[in-house]
Length: 462
Length: 87
Image 1 (cartoon, each protein chain N blue to C red):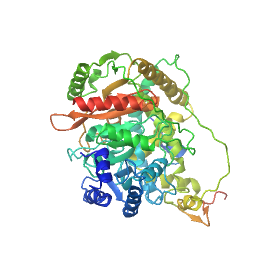
Image 2 (image 1 turned 30 degrees about the vertical axis):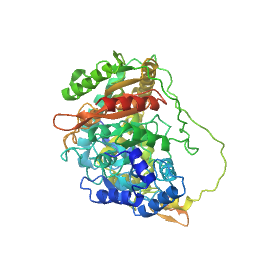
Image 3 (image 1 turned 135 degrees about the vertical axis):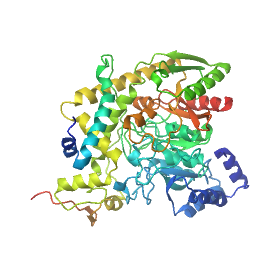
């Protein structure tokens, strides 16, 4: 897989023409049979011209002329951003998201929008209103989700890089399933401005690419403070000194929740890290695995309130001329898919009178404990490490009728979102059947640079 | 059993009668899973504070206002057309 830096050097030296480079990728993307894309944009030529002008006048950046894709919930002015929901099928973005604005500024060429689980709710892209994306390594399997289209597009070499959003693992889990690198940045460092909101205290936009270094370039290009986002914070620019100490949460391989092959793959890398001089301890993080239950209270609660705006008045097609209340019900009932409806109902339940304290308040208190535990561990250790997912990519349809089994595929990724800390999934080889696996490093808030250093070491010892 | 009709009314979300039993079953399973939080001791929990960044509340022109309104299913002259709310 070719890297951004290699392409950049060839573009700058004139060995590769931007128009030809983009043309090759667009041709492959148009011929895609995996269903990675919802749309290949029609203004690619204009974007290429802008990139060529930057190259000509000496203002080219690392990303100038690099073909990238964005998830269908990231707004690009004048283009449809549908979140793969019938509710937003005709919704045209009125403004650029911060991420798109920065990508344009850098001269990247955004060639299309990618498939995803509807509203970013799911772990397989099976909840997309437009059909599942197939895993490039095994077309009978899911690519993961919710950013499955972005992960598969990078893995299938249809784009050099792509952006997704990660609310409970939606970048890292598909990155692991598709064998690419994916970053969940520290909450707030990449602005949510122009991201179609799902669960606002958890949503973060982040990059996919073939290598950790490319992920780092992409992160730095889009992580800028955004005045229009009250949760936007400046990233730090510190160069890390690795402590060479890593922590594994005790007990994560108990109770049969993790595939034996995944565990062995993880332990092989642990042994290699030890040879590199790393000290690796198992530590007590008693609430690490509680994060998933906490997530499935807080996330639906935020969904049920956030998605109230999708009502047939402000968004969507109005599906009825009946009374206002009936119109809301029919529009929402008909245009939302099964999983989105389920989460709205679940959120309504946990926030309803009589259950609020037992569920929502309890979950918020546990969330604070989880954050304290993870941050505490990161004062002694560079990162907390786990396999990114308990299993490799599963079969299409395998978990479609068992919501909790589906949710469990995010067991190791959810804690970082709950604590609003960064986490990186690094490709970590394959199973005997040839399915990719990921190695996850969870860092402290603003610890991206440490994660990049670690990720590069893990890549080099594979 | 979870009363799906009541939740659906609260959420302004139609759930067809013939789907309600299956939806209730799924919700029961998920609630059964998240119920583990009830037994956890959270007495040591500090508050969970997210950073909120404030700026001056200044009036500025918004060029995309017509495009924003155009996202609504029914609109006219830069206004969203809403259903009749007073009988």
